[in-house]
Length: 222
Figure 1: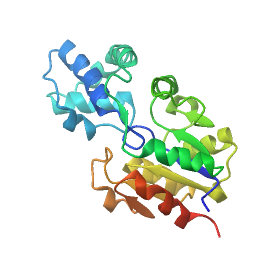
Figure 2 (figure 1 turned 90 degrees about the vertical axis):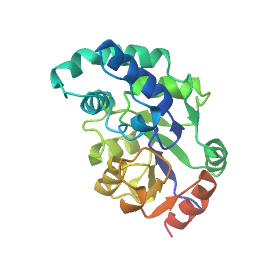
Figure 3 (figure 1 turned 45 degrees about the vertical axis):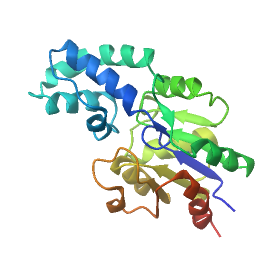
Figure 4 (figure 1 turned 120 degrees about the vertical axis):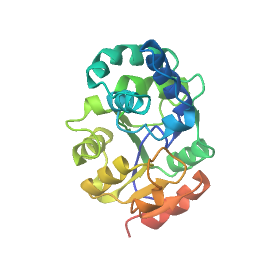
């Protein structure tokens, strides 16, 4: 009824992490004497990893200053790690959909540009231990999304097969990763994409997780 393996992006796809990412971003910006950013602005800066988020935050608040990005990383990661799930919550219907897929015998995995340790910490904080056969952050991949290697290495880690797998994401990074790896793509319309998700060429675009199971059933190999 469903593809055998479902790979999920994490931030903006399964979990609304923008409030806590914004908290960490604003901690860095305030420390550097910059103005802080509203959560809705940060939503559209997420998706390419912490370094890119810091860099884009600096660009938005004034001079880009690439020399400040690397020194700011420990500050960002320490603060974010300590506040990983203060306000982050699964999107509506996520857990119901994950339960149904698990009951149907699907293998679920996370393929994220978040560092693996932070992804694991978020999964644990949400009580999701045991839901996913693998959690592969950018530091565990040979090359991060949108490179196909990240997707294919996640499939290997969870015991999946590209011929019967689907990728679920929210952004151009996810769209590129799925296409580069040759996987069908489901995109959510409510994530952190900096362009309309409807323009990214998904096989199916969903507006709520209640639509995920029918979307996946339509993409199952015949």
